[in-house]
Length: 310
Ligand SMILES: [Zn+2]
Image (cartoon, rainbow, N blue to C red):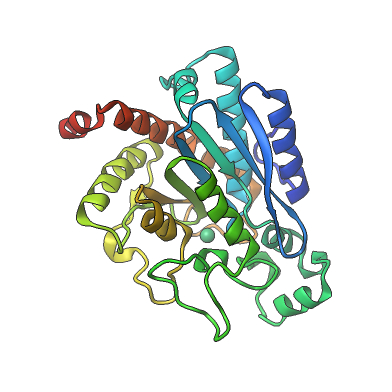
């Protein structure tokens, strides 16, 4: 359904999620988790039968247009394997998705995606469109939502700092929608996909040494699979204008690993070429399965001896 190296509108992305859930209704369900400030629905697809849930998000930043499509293509591949009872590169997709689930929000910021693809004229609410234009940022480089707030600086956590005097955490509908997902499901981990840099960030300043050591072990597995590099604690957010991230919030509130995966070469230019989708897919399509495998090992108590071997 979702062909790679092709441009999709926000609407097409959402419709594809609905079609996917219909085609695989035995193990997939589509849900609208909220509506953006410019009234675009925010879609989520949940796949799998188990309670322990891994959350995946993409498109928090409008201009990062490659990940939403890649995440959906990946989900479709998982569903094909699940239905056909096939493994995927050695991963037992059936067993994993019988024991766990994925909640995937490929496009948390549909307004920002629309702006980056088609310009400020596509914002229906004239007041919001004006607010965005006043920022004097080219549409193709737009990261924020339709209220000109960066969602990934809007989460209530220790590193949150207001960008303007009247800013407050979780002020945005998109932020609230994701927080509710974290609360509604029995989540055990979180991966947030961004672009660019081909880097995996795992370090959470507010958390303990033990917490970060565990996240680092997981990150190293993902590093090997993707060929990306690991971010060091020094180049992770230090709270100066880059706090309030969804991963920091999740780690602090739920005490489970929360990693940021930065896809695409650092020098990729905006608007991002949809020709990056295939290469990105190859790099990341196994990462959620590896996370699920790790989670099911933790559940069975196999994790400790497994990590000691590494
Ligand atoms: Zn980003």
